[in-house]
Image 1 (spheres, helix red, strand yellow):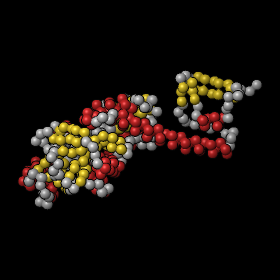
Image 2: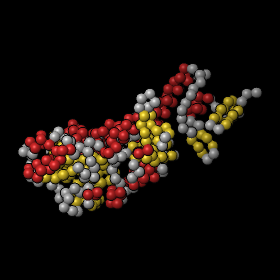
Image 3: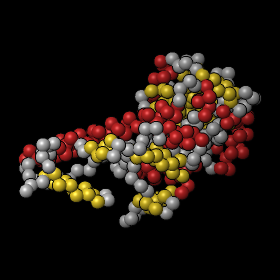
Image 4: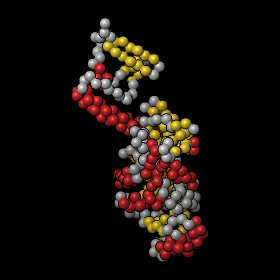
Length: 359
């Protein structure tokens, strides 16, 4: 099976690609910035000036800055690649905090009380209704960027005056006191494979590692695990980092990340996280390919029983044992070949023809 990982080439991506090589026959690491998406009559994807190869599994990942490109790539590959852990719609929703919160709301996933305002003027009216301190966010941004804190209506108003010139919608969220801590849970398929607690080490309330936070291993309770799994499922992301606050009333989701860093988690976890991701991608791809092969086999066998002498064309993988080729069992059923007869074999590069030898 052939796989590709499309990304900006981060350390986490390299770790994952190397782990994938233990399971897939071939793994290509493709640089996101060198991809072009062509629309129109000659729609397609090119990489380094050539048409993108065909793959059984493609894992597309990258930051919110490339959300449109990531969505375009995934959209073009859907229906052509048997398995992708992140569908195109996920890049649109998860890379936008506003859309993420709306989906969490629709799925009844607990989160801090959240307000949305289209402009600074409308946001000022909201400031009269909320309890302080509050968190103010832009819809886009990761690693704690675009997140601000205000402990009073006057400080929040001052922030809005300064930010109003940007003409962006605002997300206003209640601040949940956790002592500067939050949980990052990494969801892979139907499991939380690793989790860590991050704590701010400075006056900065952001506990993100990129903002000075420090990580430590944590054992999650069943409620927190279920919320992380529900969040990833709601966002249609089979590989997803979910950030959770342990509030007085229970766990609350504050953010999701579909391009989560693995270094921090790997440092505090006893599990090979990149390997867990690679195994999941392989098993999922293998299951999908086997299912499609079974459907194709059933169809061919029905056609064979209807007309045994008709020719059949089959697209399949070949199994190699040393220098020998093992053909699928379906081929034997169609041809009726057995080891008591002689066969005429004609072979050249890329082509093989086998016929029963008759005098």
